[in-house]
Structure formats: structure tokens, C-alpha cells
Length: 119
Image (cartoon, rainbow, N blue to C red; front, side, top):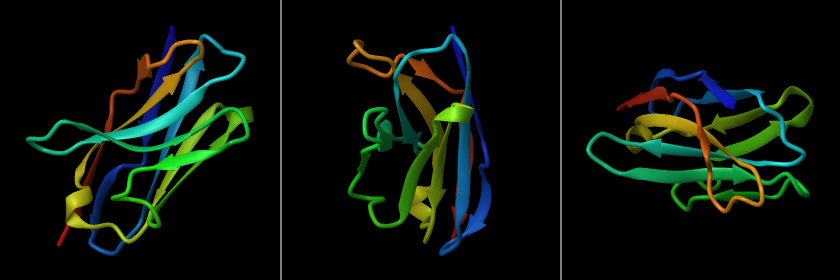
């Protein structure tokens, strides 16, 4: 099994920054993609960003593009989400997830970390 643990959430004022980290442990994979998702109160889960194993290419939701930066340190099995210019609508529980090909989906999830942005 794979364990994912997120850290770095908290309370921040609008316009501020936070950096989330997610460490992976347990079963290892030759290659894997990692992503961040979030769930705001009363809403469904939303894709935020992902970084691919191959080439390190990244994807972002339109709502965070230009403000958030996803990165990874493969040697540490860790993925980061640098969140800048935070807005109250970014308030959510943030989850990291791992996808190990050939699976088409993110099969492993962390427990989540709360991010609250005050206006």
C-alpha cells in the first residue's frame, strides 16, 4: 500500500501564500503521476494541479493557473503545491493523490489538509 501525508495547510489572509507538501511512503512504483485536488464546503471534489513523472510536465485548473505552482522531488517522493495570491474561494480541504500507470485513475489519496483564506 501507499501512504500519502499532506502538510502545510492553515489559515491565511487573502493575497497571502501557503505551501503544501505531500510525502509518499510504502509501496514504490517505477513511475507515477501526482496531483492535488480540493473539496470546498458544500461542493464536489475539484482538480487543482498535476505533475507527470515523464518529463515533469504540469497541468493546472483554470481557476489556479498563474497563482499556484506544482513541483515534485522524486528523490524524496514528495510533491509540493505553492499557492500564491490566495482568494477566499480557494478555501477547501486539499488532497494529494498518486496515479501509477497503467491505472487511468488516481488510486491513492492522502487524508487532506485544510486551507482557509480569510477576506
